[in-house]
Image 1 (cartoon, rainbow, N blue to C red):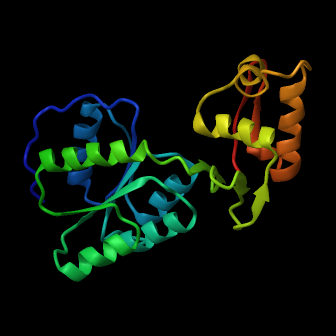
Image 2: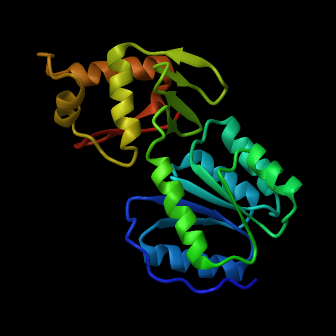
Length: 231
């Protein structure tokens, strides 16, 4: 696999990328190049590992090889989309027919790049996808489920839709928007319950969310506060 060199591009430190590729040489080249540009990169060497990471962690963009061991790239992308994973997807492939490109786009890919490719082009396409990822506001991942921002409801991994009250939704949205952050009670009270006088208001609504969605939906961090869990 020949991938031509790239010039340095602007820093993009806040974006997370999942690279699903089984070519060790290409993985090393791409992961090093992307990290050097400022991306946080996780790597999966087969489709099953890619599926696990895609369902349990939040990514802005996933880069998926078409031909993968354990689970084909198209099948992987179809499963991610079926579970409301909204990360932008760039499909890499050595297959260059119109039919193959259509299959990739129909499976849920946002872009398609044929091997061998120029690293500058990959970098430019990735930056474009990251800009578009910022615009995604209608679904926030919560483990294998998600929060539907339009309908203001939680969607469980089983597909069940659970309606939320205005304050339950607001609290869960703050947690899901900043999934890796530990939020103090004071910070959550300022963000969600500014008109409430009860000091225990955050704990009360965490209790309500857990009663509706399961105890794991909000994690308690002893001595600090709360963070997003999983559905």
